[in-house]
Image 1 (cartoon, rainbow, N blue to C red):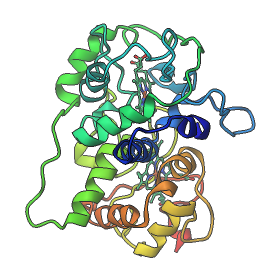
Image 2 (cartoon, rainbow, N blue to C red):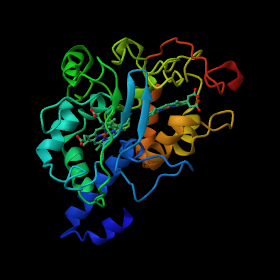
Image 3 (cartoon, helix red, strand yellow):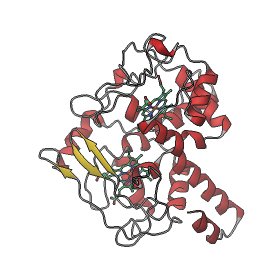
Image 4 (spheres, rainbow, N blue to C red):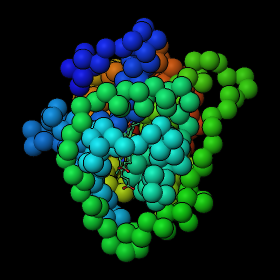
Length: 298
Ligand code: HEC
Ligand code: HEC
């Protein structure tokens, strides 16, 4: 990837800036984690970078991420910006099919125009890879894509992010990163029976995520959430994955840290922290395997 960036010689500084911005948005949005196969070693194969094939086992069936490199046949090389915008904003493919919400367009639709366009500029510079896509392994009714259009009615709130009165610029920036780019709620908010986000329980964690993992409550609730964490505690977590008890987070959060939060600028991380600390407290006890959210941490 670094090579592609080197060989791509931008005509001017504006283009170089656009590319840099695109790569930053790509990182914060965690695209690489989901679209790259996890090797047995746990390290990502650079040759398969965003060539898809990563397996997601959920209670709805098994999903495989597609190849999003610019390969003309195996990837999205034939797409134009309008195709990309429709995928990211509406969750609809160039053929007019609905995407499963395992692709978090439920968050990405809120991405700003400039960020979306920079992200597209960056994606086009990634080396093409001809790895063919693997079909999802889903049982009916989950295999019926047309049903997603019904799912979308109550579960897909496509709306741009409007400023909230009385909130600081930092808070707005934090909200944008958390809600639109880093899609924290996609894991930290429990889902309803249809697999949609249960908004009243925003960030309150879950013992039964679609992937069967336990996700802690990160609302500002003092008892069951992270209300007792200092800004410094959150900073350490988002930067290097260290918990207040000096243990390290694992699983999918470790991945979010590697791909996304550790790459945030200091200002952006501070914005995320300001936003998170203001998330409405929800009392929801999550029984975690590593004791996260439990009294042992304190
Ligand atoms: C949580 C995992 C996850 C993350 C994060 C993710 N994707 Fe995906 N993406 C998927 C899955 C799974 C699909 C397949 C959805 C389907 O088949 O309906 C998909 C589909 C796509 C498609 C459609 C490709 C095609 O061939 O039709 C594009 C484009 C895409 N993702 C781009 C991105 C970009 C850009 C990012 C980062 C901003 C991103 N994805 C982040 C899991 C993810
Ligand atoms: C792919 C799913 C996923 C995403 C996306 C995700 N998280 Fe997490 N997060 C987890 C899991 C799982 C854990 C528990 C990890 C463990 O127990 O080792 C966790 C743990 C945490 C913790 C520690 C809480 C505690 O009590 O121990 C915080 C804080 C946190 N996440 C914040 C965030 C923020 C902020 C974002 C967005 C920038 C985010 N997470 C995105 C899955 C995710």
